[in-house]
Length: 426
Image (cartoon, rainbow, N blue to C red; front, side, top):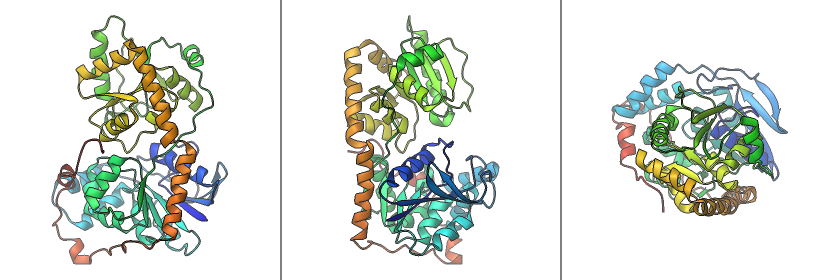
């Protein structure tokens, strides 16, 4: 079997969630199939500037082909177009212009996919909201397997995506919440799909004492891992933690791992370690009383799964449907919806060690049963086998004509999103 994995950017030094997800899938499916990655020359996502050379490459033994991005992202233009399609009546053509301005727009990449003929049995497309996934699905709908990685985002309310979700051959969902949202938005329940998510490269051993010594950490501590950004809920996390620490005689330390794009408040109980390597990250997580996940919007959360694999409880934002659902399904995390609840659940994992140990044990079992690599690989292989023996339920719907695409008859995407189901999926 020959597979193409298509993703917006790709490299061993790119640690973004969806990009790392795509790399892990490519490397693990390479054990079972001939895998080739098709991607752009972009290295970072803010501008999509061409930084890698175009042409053939290899990353960790996987063949990679890179194609140039036609234009960089103009943040101001993209912001204006987003406001328009998310909050005003608009046309399908304006949605397509929004997609082009979001980037990374690479007609050369789409031409490669379209011209592949029978070279690939399936084309695995990552991130539904991006140019390459949208036009890649339209180029080869009979071979397209979509990994949407969709959050509860106004983009999901755009009309343009419905035909894509209905017209691909199969969909690999990250969570039951994502599946429920997309089914409601696109009426695509008859399209073959499975909730699969992603595994991680968990080390054979994690050494919390090594992290304590290396970084001079005091115990107990809770840890946040990821981009330190208001969009990830970090501003609220800082507010809640500072208030919580002020009311506790011996507060824990909040340890931060990741790049900061938000000012970190100067506080004696907040430590920013910056970017660390994977072994250090896992050592710090393994020694934490809990991993804190303050994000409102996630399609899964690889770092929560990594914490559970290491036996560390998770403290999650209950207003994120996916995180709440994962905590309920795993019985391995506590959750909060206010400052008072944040303090209460952190107190609970700190003061009730028996409960914390039980949550950690549940997390290990949940990870092993649902996210270990043999489980993930088998779900992909089973999907390919299912698709090879069954015809597609739909044809890809054609785009309307020139005039119809320009009629401003579409509702604001944010309004559409409000009407979709919310909360943890059953």
